[in-house]
Amino acid sequence: MTTDRNTHSLLRRFIVLNRRLSRGLYLIAEQLTSRRPGVVEFEQQIVPNLLFPKARVLDVGGGKSPIIDAETKRRLRLYVVGLDLSADELARAPQGIYDKVIVGDVATVPIHEQFDVILSRTLLEHAPDTSRAIANLTGALSPGGTMAHYLPCRRAFFAVLSRCLGAETSRSVLFRIYPEKRSGAGFPAYYHCCVPSAMARLCRECGLLVETRAYYESEYFKANRHNRDERQKNG
Image 1 (cartoon, rainbow, N blue to C red):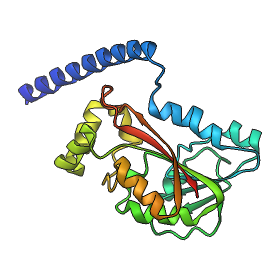
Image 2 (image 1 turned 180 degrees about the horizontal axis):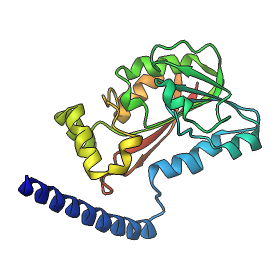
Image 3 (image 1 turned 90 degrees about the vertical axis):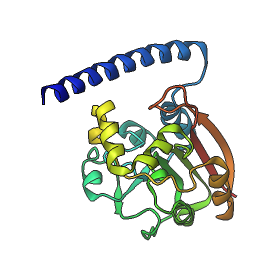
């Protein structure tokens, strides 16, 4: 028992030191390039450029952490609907951030309204059938509307490792390295069609025009540049 405890303590110290070193190197790299972390650029640049006054917005998978903040919603007088598999996640969102909520699987839940902007952030990799998810969301898109999705590539090292280890082992490893993620990560990930070519094909098959594809490094391994944002515009 003592040996196991010492081994765990040593491993934990190694992980902490490794993360500190990686963070330092990452900050240096940020100063040398104009590229920002993908999720930051998605939230602070891509999404704001899609919004306009009185837009109807569907936040898919945002749950307790919606993509659009309360100030932006108020300033632009947005109508925001939250769609999530978990009613509990939606209930934990900031009060008033969603005008309406939809509980269900993104691939199959009926969406009876149409939206100018549909957003998701690290959601589609968790959909068992991404093609059905994209098709369902396309049906909820207003003519001329836009979808923007930020998701990891299935070829990224952490994604390959996750599929090899299985869901339970992957969560255990993730929480040991990133204990702060226990409250908001660890959901089963399938990475179905989560590669640029397959995702673009799915979008085109649904009648969407792929307007922009951008590539970003993973937050799990800062040197990996497999994460990406995909914006789709109704064709």
